[in-house]
Amino acid sequence: MKNTALTAVHEKLGAKMVPFAGYNMPLQYEGVNVEHETVRNGVGVFDVSHMGEFFLKGENALALIQKVTSNDASKLVDGKAQYSCLPNNEGGIVDDLIVYKIADNHYMLVVNASNIEKDWNWIAQHNDLGVEMINNSDAYSLLAIQGPKAAEAMQSLTAIDLTNMGYYTFQIGEFAGIKDVIISATGYTGSGGFEIYFKNEDAETVWNKVFEAGAAFGIKPIGLAARDTLRLEMGFCLYGNDINDTTSPLEAGLGWITKFDKEFTNSDNLKKQKEAGVTRKLVGFELIERGIPRHDYEIADANGNVVGIVTSGTQSPSLGKAIGMGYVPTELAAVDSEIYIRIRNKDIKAKVVKMPFYKK
Image (tube, rainbow, N blue to C red; front, side, top):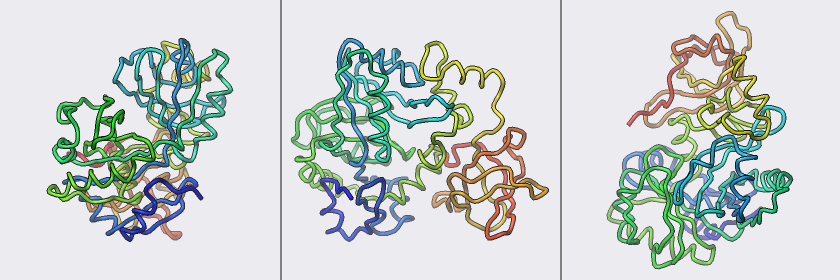
């Protein structure tokens, strides 16, 4: 199992450590509800150094990205990032990722930890364009500093204007006394904040300075458990749960990142699927009766027929309700449709709701 550059720090802080995507990662420190509320109302820090960073360089870098991703990366300007996915040849998704345009002919792709090798091989196999590919996943650390107080708490560490950074933009500059840090106004919580990329050797320095700067704002370390409840309240997909090699981006509600004004892997078949209409959709639901939905629980209709599965589920700390996502037939996908979640052989009534579940 791999450690991040900050594993010893988490252990010293008393974090409950668990294996995740091949890494030894902090699940929680004080508890999921406290950590969740810290991010919703203040500022918290996640060590997400397990994520993968690929750098693509050369005159055909954009052409390769256009070929393997579903979104239109030609729309990117320097300092802009874009959410996208890597479609496979069977109508599913290899991974979801973020594409960063550093400069003309120079891009960074940030991929999920569990898929680093898979994604690298997939992109490399399509690279007949002579693009220079560099896998720096093991050299970089990544902190997600999230919450409404993140900009104010971190401003003393950089000359970059954090308050006015647009969503999904980034800048490269000095942060916490370290040069060439990538500061990105992205995140997976829906509460604002930044993701900070830097070299492993600077990890403890950056961590300590972040906590010094944030002390007056009640900054806390946050584990993966709260990361999951925060992202689920926003209806953000988690690869391996809500999307995978067998789920189409159109079924998953990711039509907005699937652009048919260019050709990409399997675009012809996905276009046909769009024209014909999908037969199932990923929906959000909330339980009307008591119970908590979990990954892989069955979804039934009013007659007790199993019609789908829960892909993500939890008791929402912000809403005090049991919420989840899952795939259901299109005829049951409309808001207010009645569905049932099978919990310990009992069908618990739920209704389809519009996502995100949490609205600021």
